[in-house]
Length: 121
Image (cartoon, rainbow, N blue to C red; front, side, top):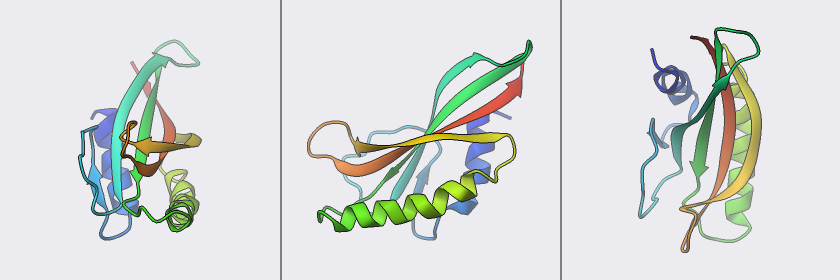
């Protein structure tokens, strides 16, 4: 099973009802509901021979454009989601960074959550 599929299978049930989830990166011109996109971004040698470390970004995009309110909603989402992500077997929460989606104007507020997964080669 691929790392992306493994994470998608574990993350999808953790997300609140009503969210949109994509198990791959895609270009969205409009965001009508809170949306999560999963993107496998890097593979590196692991800490031991025969182990690979995969880095995956889970981007959470908030459709609200009202300043202040959007930050509150995103903060609440992250405070609820990160502890749940830490419960997924073999997954390490690395960081979460404020982002914008897409990276150009006009953009929706977002968080990019970095996760790592170790697999055997």
